[in-house]
Image (cartoon, rainbow over all chains, first blue to last red; front, side, top):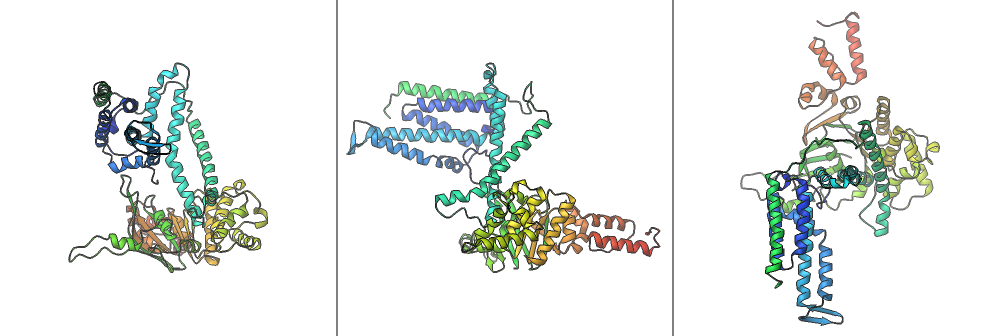
Length: 270
Length: 313
């Protein structure tokens, strides 16, 4: 396993880890709504505060959380820069050709950057604290209503969980094949882009073959166990709503209410 | 090439909850010319160790380590310096030429047939050759080297060269993959579970192939295995790994006399060693080097000495 911190489960035991995945999914949605409802810094500060509390409660090191942000740093800087240059505000600080740097532009960019960061941290927290299996269980359970209009929710959830499960396996496999080819003198680190892409062929061909082989074997194994996906299936781990989830639910509700109230009573002084 | 490791430690995923120490202070010397066996459970660190031998896992360079070394208190010995040398290559140095190292230390991974990728057997075997040559080898040179490599693994060059590696049988694929590693004539050949997943005959053939290589091509052979019979039948020296440490290094002949210790480590012993101890419990002492052949001869000799009528107390 290499350094893939975005979206990888972080195995510690904590309050947040034990929450019902359905609630976590709903909380995430509510949180994203709150981020976008917040129209001033008080609202965003409240969101950020709640997030900090969640990170602490989840017992995930801050470094790990920041690493998730690292992946989108470029996007954040890029959008912020565009907004600083092109936002039409009234208080102009500097201007050159078509670019104006305005007070409003700066504030808006900071706002946007903060929103993006909160968004990424919050969604990566979900995958840090929830195993792929319980995540798909949660998704399946939340999508149950779609079964009524004949959408194969269970099959979709299965596809999703298999895909998630295979990510680390294929990463390991890639590593192994890369090592084997390195031992035969393959060089993945030098040369220009084209050369490097060509150097990946001896890795990609065996990787693809092994993915197909594994898919075949998995299919056979499922057939051998008479898996059809239909009928009433029982669950090994039943999702249950507990007092823990109630508290988290109340926090989420309070956050949204708070943000809405702040939107009304503390009108945008930024 | 002599392989020397001293105080070698390795931690996977350091500084994370996944952190696992794979090697703890391993010291091991493999002399040139040996057919060396490394025994251990899954997770005992044997594969991690062999991956160090051609620089696939790298040590932090010695310079960095000296800087990072914690100040030791008065009267305390400084932590021992890690040493890892393969022939003249010092793997603790950052400047080591890893390409040259990998050329002289061939590495065959577990299930090597899964690394085949080229359209023809010839191209696949030639892959390493092209990578390691300083200048582009001529077609004749490639043909010659590939032919020699395929023949030493017991495959017919004319018949094989234009086939796709994916239409071969499992055993043939493995041979092609091994040929793809030895084509550069490495001095040391390291194989991780070379006989895994083969039937008994296939296993025997692979081991015979390794002995042929040992005689003709590679001075030193290192195999990683958990199959004790494989070790007792083939190796001149064996190291036992357990939980990242080297428990002992002995010729199999002596190693399997300590069958009880191995069993205590949760390791198996060869069938011959099991029979020897079963016979010993009945009062029949058989002295053998734990290869099937030697065992059979000794037992037969004992049997005949007792007039062929069953011996023992």
